[in-house]
Image 1: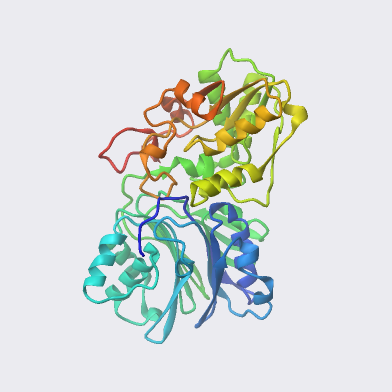
Image 2: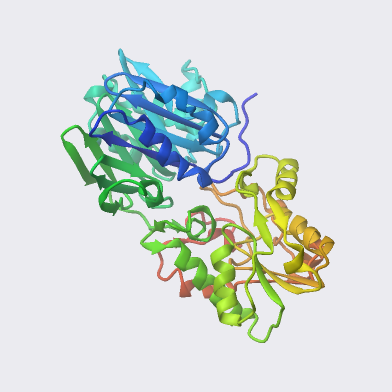
Length: 462
């Protein structure tokens, strides 16, 4: 039965044109570098005029087996790593989505969340249209077909952009569309999610993060600005504006949690941002605090803990070794799986933990699942005290645009004091970065911070 699931972490997209021939291996390599953005499923669509799709559940290496790539052909392609932000986890939702219309193939890969998808779907269903998936991405594809009503090879960049603006203007999206011998990429008017372009010796590529281009012989990397996109053909590429940007609202969690520390997102280096947040956290809430060791919650807490340690002079140690083969617990679809995942993901180092007063540094506290389980581990290894610190402010509101915050009641910080939160997760104390201190890193009015604010009515808060 169709239902809207809780919102979860958004996805990762990669695509482009390979000058030398077979793009499929490049698609897989790009998605491997974006694996942190989605671990439910992965897929690629590739070819030239006609498109072949390979997709399945699981991580990239299992979903896109190398045996499928041996005889792959085609210069064009797009790929996707997914965690569902809308719809259930049925196989039909795995992207890229491909359809054949008027004898031609068109594929789509989408990162984000379209708020109007349910309403548009209902309108189509009332006139007898059938959907094969419960994904909002299929709604985008169907809306394009109904608006343009001609072969995909005849769709122009301007026509596609106009349809997106007219029908999905309040959504958060970065979209790759693969038409016969052509790739189009679009970033929404608000700029919630990042989209990067690279000109390389190997070809022209577009991705959610610039880390996806590492390993290529890059000549130039460009951030696709809000309300802009790129069109890639055999002849080259063109970056174009298609609308006026609206109240730019870049998601702070791209920097705090989602993106790879090696990436440069929204003109900021992610690793440097996390170092700075750790420094500010100590200087703003813990100036006179003493502990034996500062331990990060890996991986996104690593830079934060280094910054905290540098500012506090508290020795930094890896007291928790992360099993790199495990998925990220934050983007697991069920609470039971998150809890089990945390236990399997972290291996405590007893010699670092035993008889120590520990300050545990994480990027954020959402439900408290990870923190609660980790603190249990630390105490079982003989920790004398465990003090939890978050480099983001209290998360007290839901997110409309793909962050895993389904209901306020599930948020551990919602309507609770620091002391109540500490008691719930088993910590000796808990402190958060003060909301006003975010401006030292995320300056100006270009950032979405809605999840830190109590306002019930505003959707777009810079």
